Image (tube, rainbow, N blue to C red; front, side):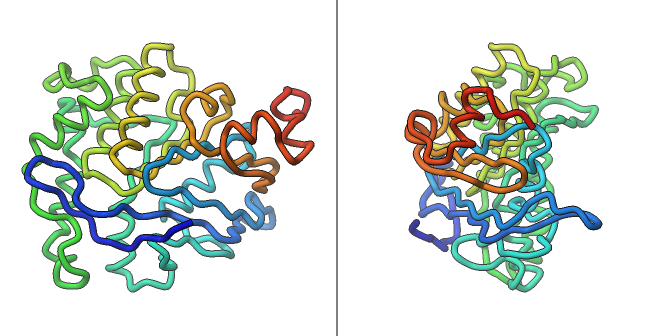
Length: 275
């Protein structure tokens, strides 16, 4: 793995101008009360790739993604952004790192306003912190007009023509696409998607998978949590298998599915290992 620790800017046309940043978990252990949900999980998502984290429901995928998104501090282990331990950073630097990580949830939540307003929300939040961050860690975001950024994000998920629609009028699949556009609008270094196509129809699923590929091709590090092994095979470059809170195998997707080194992975893929 090659670490990169560069600030991210944009050219006037909105294209990325610098190397992107990896996100790495090392030895993560986490739980609530006396029970451990994750045990010694190490995983990395690199710029310009899609990493699928597969496993049955209840095996810790959502907890892992919440830790990677810096929503919670792990009980043990580290999360590194660009090669630096984020929980050893000063608060303002960690906030800057967190704002460079986009997160899409399985349960989409939109505001009672237009599609454009929903997608621009993250940009507005980011702008409100810009002056404070500049005083402490420098200009990590750059100055951009939010309008084309919102339009580009919506175009990525195939919703450019719904710019002025009331978000309350959208179908579940359309709402999920808007939620992903909202995560993409700030042009993150890392995009984390937790079961983004669960219970969606093929048309919306295809649109979201296309958005993942486009994000990867733009140099974003994309991580996808899914129990859909066919989806992992369709879209991911690498796959990590999470069973019972432990990452038991990871590697190139073709190799993991065609020739797994762990017998539990083989049985899981064949549908014989049930949790």
